[in-house]
Length: 200
Image 1 (cartoon, rainbow, N blue to C red):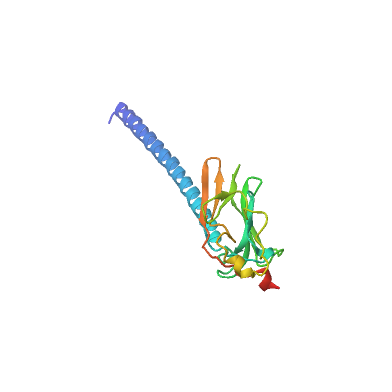
Image 2: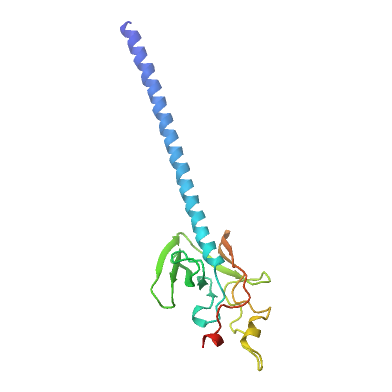
């Protein structure tokens, strides 16, 4: 081979090497982007599952300290499907939005220190909403400030059986200006686990 042929060979080899390195770099960048989207969607799916699990396990408690209550920025109630405690154990669970972060906390008893962690970030302008058994949505729960009390001659269990009395919402959702972010159904249960009358 002459010197010119050798130089041409090296130029062609360098050109091919450059193309191969660019292709590998492009592939690596695309692969990293796909992996990033996959991790984000997997995390989002896991967070939705956390939310749906605890909401599905909510049970109607008639005792004030464990009764379900909710506002636009938080809701709490007794769930039988906590994220940290043993399934089936009644645990007071609380979902909240503070400083644009959705958080979850649970404790075995009211006022007791339990676990808490950030579940979802970037929750700007998000809010919780609650649906009754008729499909009406509210930004707080219970919809009425006054809960129906037993009338003269009426037992607390008759109040519980009143079809207009919802101890827990039927659906709970996390909404944003763009629409529904998370949606979960509460397992239906007409009677509370415990009432103030039975508790005393």
